[in-house]
Length: 208
Image (cartoon, rainbow, N blue to C red; front, side, top):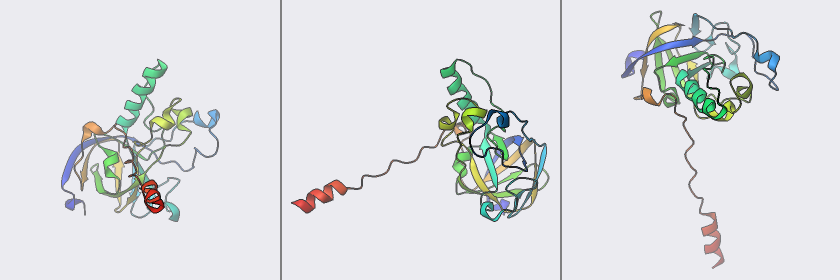
């Protein structure tokens, strides 16, 4: 399956998360946000189920979105933007956004609706990119004020795992069905503007 993906990129896995509990639930609370992030050096992925040990593993409602992938460049760009406004630029924890896999060198947002694979040397993990992983209001607390809005359009992609494999921190090979531009990894994807409905024109025509 991975051999059918024509575009190859050398990337780096800079963050892996497998959390048994859904932490960012309800109203944002400082005591919850201050807890250590459950980072991993290595995670096992199961086809149709997700990341072993993660809160979404095997849950029917999340099987098409059980693995979340984020570009670290999105967090770095956001830190620069917010830091310039607040006067206190500082790097963000790559796992604070609670995505399972954080990559460097990949235009993750271009993988919406597209198949791709990651090979860290312990079995190729094929993923079906799906809908965007939208940021939540907790981002303003765990990252910085304004992060909830600023991360829109670059909060990552929810994916369905199609093969078993292992991901680990370090260099990896990403293959995709579509060409990617690593230089755009931190750029937000904005929704296309809606075309005019012509309702007003139709109403005017009907009244003539």
